[in-house]
Image (cartoon, rainbow, N blue to C red):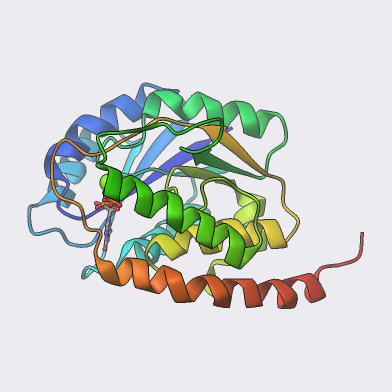
Length: 245
Ligand SMILES: Nc1nc2c(ncn2[C@@H]2O[C@H](COP(=O)(O)OP(=O)(O)O)[C@@H](O)[C@H]2O)c(=O)[nH]1
Ligand SMILES: [Mg+2]
């Protein structure tokens, strides 16, 4: 299955240079698309140089920093329209928090018929390295809240290591996605679930970044608190529009 791993970046120069080769060695059918919001540290120029040597590397540069969700939507649209004919679209952070060595878990789940595969830090225990207790509790609490508000029974709604088939992205309809931060991940997964797609979780190990700095800020958390309820509301519209099986 021809796959594109979409990696949003903002000031990830050191990380992206090391990450791309590791992703590409996971399979000959794997391409990488970096969606960079014009990072001041020159992340995009590093990627463009790599592309000159390897056509499996792609780079989409956006004008300015607009948040993770907007970057992903632009990247997914680009990848859906690409003449490469990608079938699988995987989201991955640039900072090595998501292990490219675990991509096979996603491919196995797709081979078994999943439409959406979600990497989960919290299924069968907790697998998070290098986070302090406060950060871990925020994430665990956020997931309990998101599960309650959206009614979607996944253990890691906020996680960012996920994969979608082409059909799943078309069903979800990217133009309907309103959220931008952690809520973006919640909205994508919830809408997949509300549409009746086969959403499967696979256990992943998450490591906090060693290099660069987080782009997380309180606005992202606040957005998620409110957005969860708007997402829940969208369920009724989606359910009404679904054909009866
Ligand atoms: N293009 C783009 N990428 C972003 C933006 N915000 C975060 N990212 C990228 O999204 C990924 C996750 O962000 P990160 O700061 O590691 O979030 P954290 O893991 O929650 O601390 C990283 O690859 C970031 O470079 C943004 O506004 N635009
Ligand atoms: Mg990170």
